[in-house]
Image 1 (cartoon, one colour):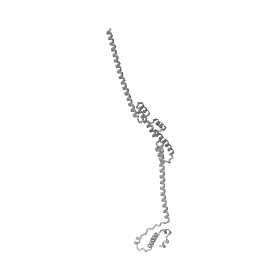
Image 2 (cartoon, rainbow, N blue to C red):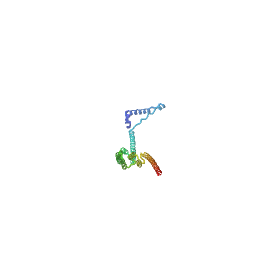
Image 3 (tube, rainbow, N blue to C red):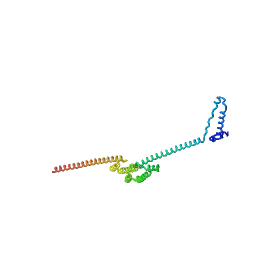
Image 4 (tube, rainbow, N blue to C red):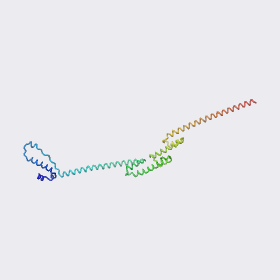
Length: 267
């Protein structure tokens, strides 16, 4: 068996001893089968050819090794390309969101929380300088508002509105509402037609415009009723005075007639 092993090609020698033993036994059986006489057709038919044992050479091993490497490289390339694609996709979406939020800030937005949120979400944005500059002005406006919002001073509130004429600003709206409230309080305290007229002229669509118009109408009605009653009283007094005068005139006339009759009688 060792002799046979020496005659094998170099490729087969790489196998381990068990594989070589099995191959040698099979080869000997095949040789014995070929050299023995054929006794019968049935025996030849029943004899089966043993399965061929694949021989793996260095070249095949080398090809298998490189094939695995290629597959691994392809898988890695797919993973890397997917990761890169996902990265660029997320960066693109982030840039779109950043531009959208910046556009919202530039469209008459005076909410400082929106500016603070933008800086927090996009600390490295190319728009950060502009956003911070606008935020600084907004913070100054909020500081001024904190000083006047509870002042109960209409002049101070009007000065705030003149300094920050921003109709879409929340603080501008709050200042106008505070002025409206104070003017109504003044009119209600005075409770005169002139005071309500003054309020309605300044705040034709104010929060208390309907109530001011109602109060004014009631005062006008009350004034008209007062004037009517005074006129009636004046007329009544005038009639009574006229009656008194007429009564006195009648008495005087009667006295004159009586005096004349007495003079005639005496004469």
